[in-house]
Length: 346
Image 1 (tube, rainbow, N blue to C red):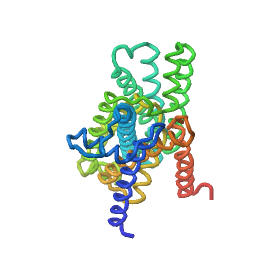
Image 2: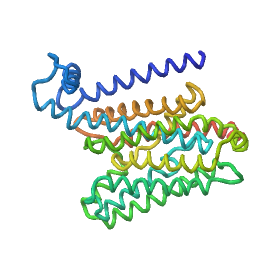
Image 3: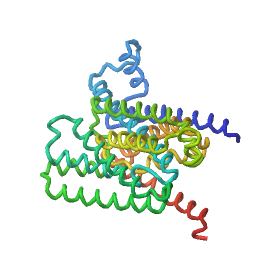
Image 4: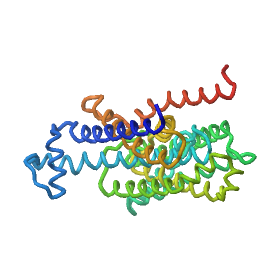
């Protein structure tokens, strides 16, 4: 199958997954709501009267105060993490780079937890987002500085740095759990597990705006990422300011990851699985890669959240647990394939 036909198939598949996942997420729950009532409620909110609109105020409240914010948050978070992963893989030139693997997500969670323990949440929910962004930015800068050697990124150093950052962040979270009160302790545990439960429209707007702006910026930079893939020297000859591109991209990754982690906790491997799967399907060109990754990440999180709410009756499993179950084996597969190409594990 040609690359163009694969792109069409991927686009159709993502559209079906998104529509199906969003519809199923709105329908499935402890309160039975039909697809017709979901569509009728949305149309009524848009000013279109239909016979499908539910008359029960409980159904309306359930949709607009609980399920729709949760779905919208899943879409925004999935897109943000997938785009962040695609950008990290572009600037590091390595398909194993991902916010969770190299410690950016845990750094953001540590920053958010510091804000919680210090009681800075009283200043507003945006305070947590700011601290999460700062933690993610510091982690990304550290990974970038340590893994660079002789003008390129060392794969082994990248992974080892990620392990070190994750270990440090884990120790910091453990210390904060020790000194925090019971309320703050519950919130910190939430960061470690990841969940879309309790999402509010005010938070959704923040993450959605960051995800949309970040995706647009990444698409604009897509041509430069393509040139960077040719090698730093070639990219410089073609007019790319490589260091400025990398630093700007690092800030972009920290912003996307920090916004997502600040409100839903650590959700690992989305930025690893989605961009790599999309790259295998449509090729390495970064503009279509970023766009498809955004939709793919949104679909993955919505479907994973649907599974988290429905796999155990009456329970809401941490979504980070499910994404790790998917991403962990996929990460081992990528690592095995990369080692095999370099002559190891023969």
